[in-house]
Amino acid sequence: MEKFIKENKWICIIFGVAILVSLFSNSKSNDFTSLQKTRLCKAYIGDLFNKPTSSIRKFKEEGDLIYVTYVRHSDKSEWFYVCDVSSKSMVWTGWLEDKRDWGRLREEDRVKLNVDKNAEKVTFIGPDTRNKVVVYL
Image (cartoon, rainbow, N blue to C red; front, side, top):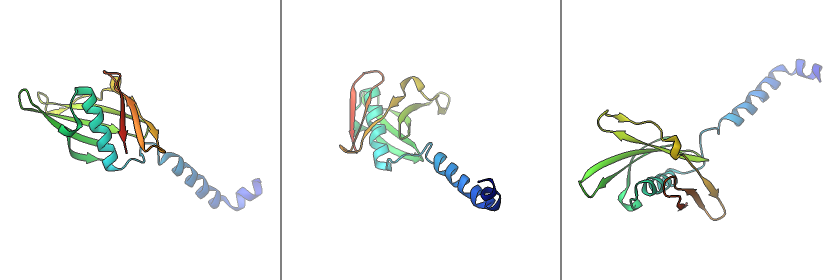
């Protein structure tokens, strides 16, 4: 075996690198489409802030980050949020108008995503409401 490795050093190196790349290339990315990530984010923010998903709109996307907004009817103020949607979980942050910057990720509100590919749905438990939220893909 040692002789084989010495004689085929470059093949072994390339093979090893290929294995490492395949292991780590999927560490953050997921199989969700843009539309699916948007549906998940809208359901998450809707559950957190008791808003219908139809009143929440996506205005930007960067990789796994989905940016959404809604207008609060009581005072017509606009609220902005970002969801970081991975294949296993989702977490949010909000825009802090007074600081003109995004707030911290709300790790205490991170939800585990339970994917049922056969039923084409994702479920999670709302962090505040404890509701079981179902999002059909």
